[in-house]
Length: 66
Image (cartoon, rainbow, N blue to C red):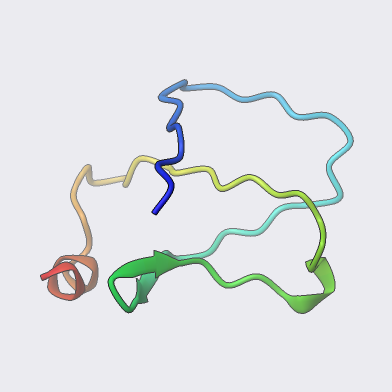
């Protein structure tokens, strides 16, 4: 599997966006996924990881990660 570089910046400015979505990352086999509507197939995209408000993983995320 290819290792993707992860940037730990705290601010991102993006111009000319069409819109954005907030989705939960869920378990998919031995990895994780974020669902996106088919209408965006072929588009370039960014996945932005946000800090949890409480600073902890949700109970659901902890259980599925085990």
